[in-house]
Each structure stands twice: as C-alpha cells, then as structure tokens.
Image (cartoon, rainbow, N blue to C red; front, side, top):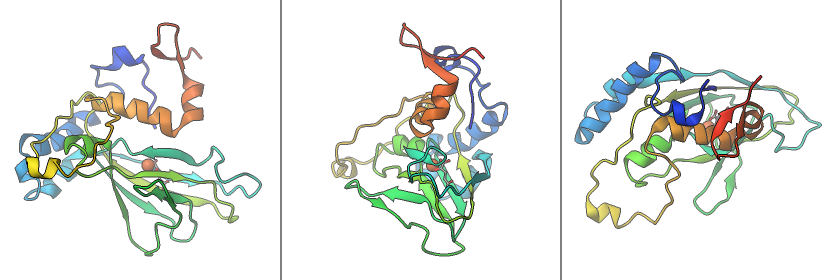
Length: 218
Ligand SMILES: O=C(O)CCC(=O)C(=O)O
Ligand SMILES: [Fe+2]
C-alpha cells in the first residue's frame, strides 16, 4: 500500500511515491516497451528488473462479520504489469470474476501453486487483447487467519504506458472494452487504490471543491 504525500496533480511527475526502487522498476518495463517483439525471447530479464513490491498480508478470520466485510479487498484489477500470488491453500477468500460477471469462489484448487494475474498496465500495453483479472478477497469465517504473499511487478509511478503495435486482424477480435487506466501508471494505481481499498482511501484522501483529490491533513 502506498500513500503519496502530495496531491494527485502535483504527484503526476514525481518519483517519490515509492522511492528510488521505481527507477529500477522502470528499466524492466522499458525492456518490454522498446522492443515488444522481444517479449517472448527475454521475459525473465525484464521481469527480474521490474520486481518492485512484495507484501505479506494477514487477514484475520472474523466469523461474526459478513463476507464483504472491509477487512478483505474490494473488487479490483491489480494496477501492476503482472502479479504472482502465493496464498494459503486451505483458507479461501480469493474470488475471480468471469467475463460474464460471475464470481468463481474457489480459484486456488491446486495446492502448492502460484496464481498469476495480469494487471492493468499489461492490459493497457496490449490494448485489452488480454484483460486484467477482476478479483476480490472476502472475509473468511473459518476460524483460521489467512496469509497471502502477492508480488507485484510494477512500472515506475511516472512511467507512461504506451500501446504496443498489435496486428489489425487481432485487434478486430477484441470486444470493445473501456480502458479505465490513465496513460501514466501512477495515476492509474492511485485510482485503483481508491476502488479496491475504499475505506482506507476515504480515511487518507478527500475530494476538494475544485474536484482535486488531496491528502487529508492529519
Ligand atoms: O491477498 C490476496 O490474496 C490478494 C490481495 C490482492 O488482491 C491485492 O492486494 O491486490
Ligand atoms: Fe489484487
């Protein structure tokens, strides 16, 4: 989770939301962007350079609270380029939404495996030829806490995500899709945070009369 210290318009061109790590992260993404045709040939090189953020999450089991209790994570697409998720094989909670809007309840049915999500940065890069996975985490009522470890491979916060050239015969098959993302990765990530962590967001940010989202004074 990140909390930019400036308001969103000022933050547009800064590197300071996530620190110097971003510079390394950007190298990784740049490898994809400069040479999209090379993606298949050197994915590991690019991914290794773009490793940015790992978090270990412990979701307390709350059997007296509804499934949609705020301790989980609301419906969202990861803002990342790619996410690799290690999660508890026994305690569920992760749900994935299908294209027709249904929630798949148990999506980690293979023990000892990782879940790989493509994120919004990837979706934008390839013009929705692949769609980022909408998912959420429900409160679990099993009596056991749930541990998960997502690793997010992110572009730099001020990286501008281009579209790679996709042949027309492929683009013609892509259903019309609304791209939620701003071209600047950090702006998209900020908006994504507002969608997925609504209560946290409201605690730290407010929309002013001028319509600009600003960090609350504490
Ligand atoms: O805890 C999980 O299993 C995934 C959390 C998640 O979706 C996220 O942090 O983006
Ligand atoms: Fe996620």
